[in-house]
Length: 408
Image 1 (tube, rainbow, N blue to C red):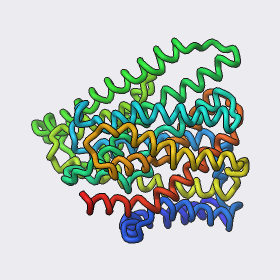
Image 2 (cartoon, helix red, strand yellow):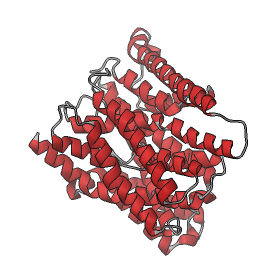
Image 3 (tube, rainbow, N blue to C red):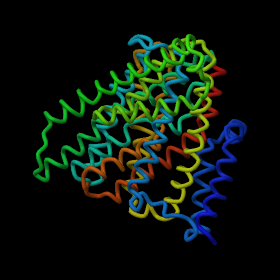
């Protein structure tokens, strides 16, 4: 059979199912992520020769750019649906999670990677960096709804805004791992250069470009278009165009595109905040995001079937379980201990530190910049952690959120 036609049929069926999956997930209480991973696993077990190789090691550039695309689309959609205007006071919960919890998770994962798993220092730091950020892609079950929905769940707001912020803030630590690796091999690199460029400059560039872009796009869509009929549009496609434009410009000047896209989305969201066009923008990005999610999860399921977990040891399983069920929940709960939230809300926020496509992107990105040791083991450990997260969080998210809503 023609492999291309087989792929078209599978993609068509998968994308067709996307239209009903959110309702099915809500009805069953099981995240649709589980369905697509299981589908990919079954497909590659039954007909591996008819499908493209799903292993990230064999498709480095494709893995890097597909995961990059889904993350930036997700970041735009995440920013557009956050109703709460930014201030240090009203955003204190996600800022604590990004500044306190994420840093401690990076440190804990790096220490366990070095002393418990036996990775080299650069690989251990990389393990912490790629697993630190929560994922905006697979976290829809615990995030706020569409723009102007009116729901005031502090739990969902904290998890949504954290996922939007920390995908960019984790980037300096991926560069730190690369810097350590380069220093060990004698190449010109230093911690001072890392701090000046990869921490200070890239973050500031991302924030500034994101803010200015959000303002500029808002002025064009909501003010200039009122004066000039030819510029008036209500196409949701604008959200994706803005995502690619802002991300590309920021990366060209070596800023953090993830940060820029999210800041742009937040800034645009609060331009004519009550305008219905925001619903259109969010709806379109949500559809594109779900389309890409089903594709990537099928590929991830295929990688599981084709042996990405082959290097797994008992220690790696213990690491993944410990990181998801102890490290993140404890540090997440601690970060919010001084807040006015109820204890069950703090526990839920700590527990739902969902890992996903962002971690795969960071790992692929790091491997494209430096030849880390233990690459197969890193792929296996990160994939195992993502799989556990999909299963554990995918089976509990709907029920926990419904419980918190009833108890509010």
